[in-house]
Length: 318
Image (tube, rainbow, N blue to C red; front, top):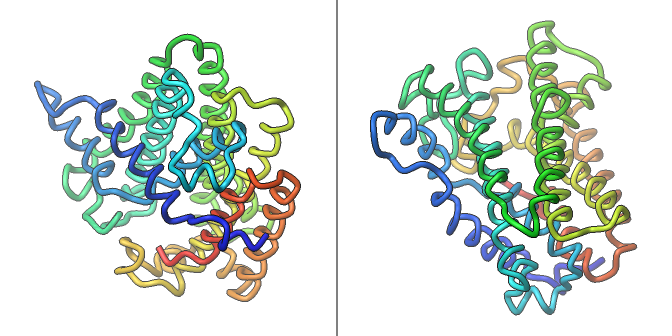
């Protein structure tokens, strides 16, 4: 698809990001009472910003299932605008996804993990609040995410149970946490194989993208075929994101990325550029993009937003 001429991706991202940011902090405890320091630490990394790609994917999954096409989206439509109950459910789920993602960043930055000092252009949470409070802030964001989903009301309560299952699978012991574990094991062993690398990428990053798109589709009432399409596209987009991230850690700058570059090589991380070289990493990214585009081409105009998003991720500089 020559979809860039048909769809303004940046406007789409800005609108959806605005929806998420407009609700996110209303779901997090205010900085009051004896535990106010914990609540400040929770909000600190959330408030640092970020692209909000994963929560946007929740909304995009619903847009896809509801059949929104570029002309409607250009008018500012989104799936939730058709039903206030659906809007509430989608925004709670989207914000829960951002809480899960942010918890993972806080924990990844800890000295026992990747030991980073910079995240989203600011000092990492443990540099500001100390390791113990940062650990607790991550714990609190993870559990509060599922509390937020639990507040989804009728008639979406039954779908919310499927949302919990999907998100727990993507972020838990067989998803994101497993990827992080094998990432650390490979680092300590001094390397690994391409199958180890694929295992890490599919779980550490792609699993949450997959869950995010699928969650939106579930809440919008997607059928089995639509949900399988979203799972496949979500995993592929997540892999594109991580391969691109690996490349940017080599070629990007601290100013562009808002985090320290060159850390993968310094820590001996298993990455596509490190294991197979930059050219192979770029080729892998292009192959994944072609796969996503092929899947979405068969979906007609409603697949254009996700196709453009996948293309944008391959070209990103932050």
